[in-house]
Image (tube, rainbow, N blue to C red; front, top):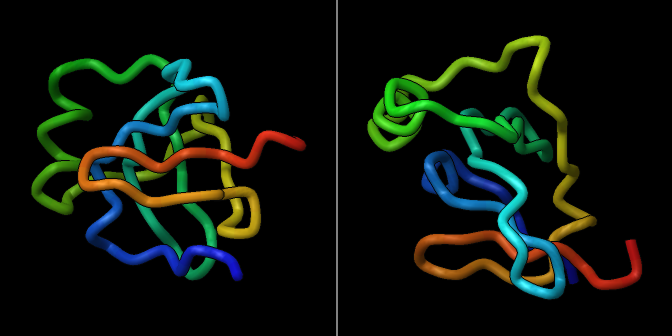
Length: 80
């Protein structure tokens, strides 16, 4: 069963199945997280308070690619 993404996931770190950090969720729209692979302090703060915006440098992660949700991170499935 896929993880349902919510606005509460903004500001979380995205990690792969081995725990390697891939980026920061800056915005959630519908079933998709927008992930900044190189977030600066401003992006981290905006995402933490729900003011994040998606931009051209970010990549998307659909909720079906997420294995688990933690308090501070989203872990991607290993078979990706």
